[in-house]
Image (tube, rainbow, N blue to C red; front, side, top):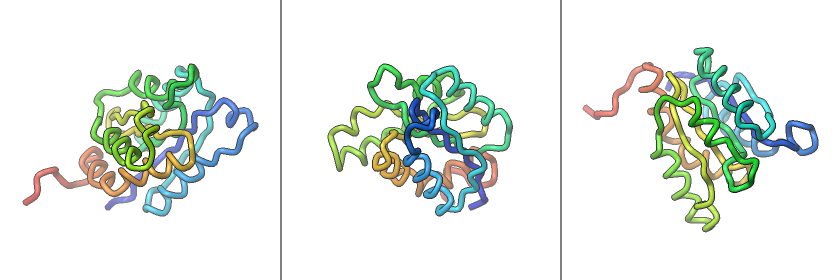
Length: 165
C-alpha cells in the first residue's frame, strides 16, 4: 500500500458552533491514522448542502486528497444533506461500499437501513459518507477499511488492477 492522503469532514450544526464535541470525526481520524492514512485535513461544517459540497469539491479538485470520509448528515432529519452534497459533485458512484456498510450495520441494528450514506468518486478522490453517531461511524468505516487500499490503488493509478494474475 502507498500512503494515501485523507480528509475527514463532520457535518454537524452544533459541532460547527462549538456546542458539541466531534466524537465521530475523532474516531474516524484515529481509525484512518491507525490504518496508515495521512489525514491532512479535518473539519466540522454545518449541515448545509452547499457548504458541504463546496468543501468536498475544493478537496477533490486540489489533487492532494485521495479519500474524503464524511460523518453525519446521512439520516432522515430535515437538515441531513450529506449524501446529496456528495452526489452534487461526484462523477461516478461506488454503491458497493455503501451497500456493504448498510449490510454490516444490519447485523447489529435494523436502524442501519435508515442510513442514506453514499460512496462516490470525483476525479481520483473517493468520498464515503458515514453516519454521525460514533458507533455507526466506527462500524461503517471498519466494514470498508480492509478493501479501500485496493480501490484507492486503482483509482489513484498507484498500481494494481482488479483482475488477479
